[in-house]
Length: 372
Image (cartoon, rainbow, N blue to C red; front, side, top):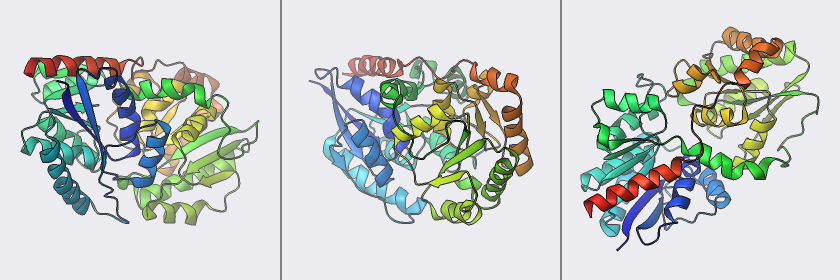
């Protein structure tokens, strides 16, 4: 009888990184029976990904509310997921990353003594408030999980330092590379979601992290204004997150700036097309730090710390923080110094070879066989 796996997700990054795993699991119907649970922590963005990857949840809790708070979301995911787990009785629960959905589903499974497998385990900044609440979410999941699928050697070391048993940790690579390889043919001729002059150097910007709300985000906006003023051959595209804390600040400061395009959040394919066209990327996103190296695009990280130090060590990314002068200086260097720019574009991708999902499913099958 096939082992029943409950795979939970609630946000766009989760489905991007779990879609290749789900695809691989479905190759083994005699051994593995996946049940897909969507919490819909982020409704609209999640639905875009489900359609793109042709995934239909078996269960959809539809929990997103306007201006939802972390405590209310946490309690609602816990209550609804716990009932699902009691009804489904899975042999194993799979969560990905560091979202509220992932943490709460892992805790609900632990309460019912159901083993948890954590995809993208072991990322750490060692600063509990950066990123917030993700850093604590992933630490909690590590304490709860039975199987830890680490994307990099550094993630493996992080888990071992915390006392996780070596036999429970598996180095797999990052499934985002698997997803990118699947999507790459679809974006080569895809038009951009905004019109950019062919001769312009495009800078792609994303900034939406909670810890950057307020003055840090204002500093980032001021840096973008400075860059537009200093470099007449650049255009900036900024897909603005719908969170009111982001939209109000960004539109107040940037809505009238020439050659700076504020657009709505884009589809995954449109985002990849923008990455592919970009000269470099300014971001506080974790996912973009992983995606850009597959396109050989330099990344300037708008944070003081990152849970993805592999990109920094490999030379594909640099931490630039949120001070206006520091951001401008780092961008100026890439725009004015071809040798510095070229060095970052030629650095090796530290996040994997596109076979992470195969390794994850291999280890899942071995584990489930051992406990059957």
